[in-house]
Length: 316
Image (cartoon, rainbow, N blue to C red):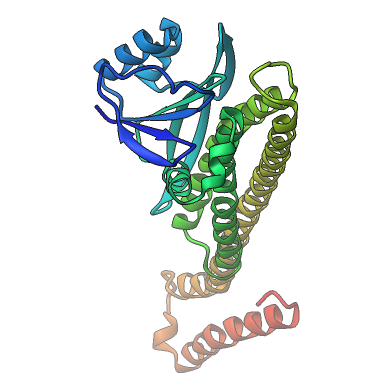
């Protein structure tokens, strides 16, 4: 059964059996971390902790937006983390049951915040004094802080895109712009509910959140507001980059059309002279050396003169 039991007083992890007892007596607090839950795991949690079937159902499907739902004697909280590997975003959802003397975290993918907190509990005896709400804050704080380097990475890519647009914009550049825009939209969909959830926990409307801990959740809320603003700023920068790309492509197309137009304009009088000289006259120009010389002179003078005129007019 993939449930890790951590007694915060000792920091010692133990493996729970299916018939494990409820949280330890004498005012101690336990943290149960359920990784990749099976149906037996969820049934055990529902039986031992009397969790609501709707909350267990959310843990079964992992398709929830960040939220806070109060139940009798505990809070059910959904939070999200996002990782980025090889330029692709991957969502990591965590469901939380927060009680007065226990914290149950349920997740499908390995979470860096969980691993970091578990390692800290094993070496830092001060964690034994944590309440469940403070322990949850420590975990979510690491999840929220992970957004900042991710956004810094995206901002660096936007800077590279801007330089690429000015130097050598290609069709692949536009594809990268749209890919980043989709990622930012996805991040906004994740961060906005997280911000609302942390604001709810910071409002001290729930008895399970100590007023002293609510201040820390308010700090999380401020961080998420800042992250949301950074996302909007990056989206604006990408919008400007897309406008610059379209403008660059349009200017490049105009330059090509100008050159083609100049070539067409130069060859128009040449075509006229050649066609006129080849008409069915009584005596063709090739039969008269003087007429032939005049024709060849015009074929050279006219395009050279037009090129000189275009140069004086600064069209080339």
